[in-house]
Image 1 (tube, rainbow, N blue to C red):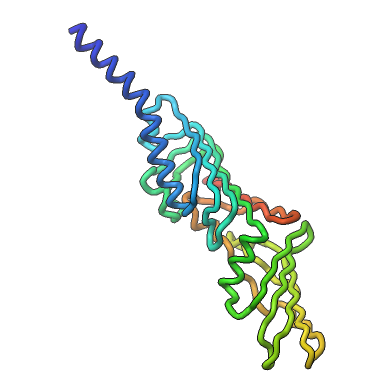
Image 2: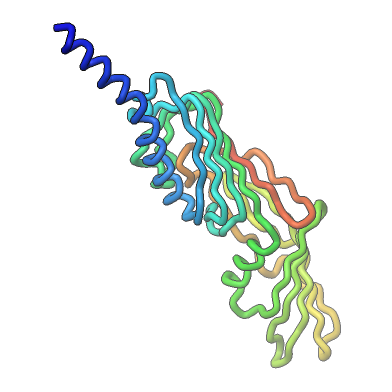
Length: 228
């Protein structure tokens, strides 16, 4: 009987040591798939450790580089939270249902000038020589477009803003310089371009902030609590 009890204790101890690595790998694989990232680093812990397999995470921090956030690729994103209850197998679903509850959970993404430029090049296929410059006041975009049979220089400016859970690039001004027409201020010709729908993440999220700075924009979303 003592040998059986001793065997059970040894087995539980080995299980306690093995589970964190197994669970961390499962969570890491799912989050990396959700972010479509090249690399990801995950720090997760729970006591007792076997609760991780049931989706309980006392603390989680995952940092991914060159991943996809919404519709564009970002240079860096960090997911961090405490007292999380989740369906681990659904973490890559991006349907807002993987996390059922959390004391706190935030997602931060950094969009660089290069990230937005690459996205706009794909979105505006007819615009050539695109260049994006970010400052705390605005996002400036320059490029060239075929206009009335001749190359025209474009000068645009806009901001990042949120409306009903959608984070968009809002074009405030567009100026076309053409040797035939001179300068023409067209206004919001290109319209708003949705970058991220916070309702389509792996947890029920809401917009928190967008901080524009030199060379990048820092986006932050947090988990929406049931009573909010």
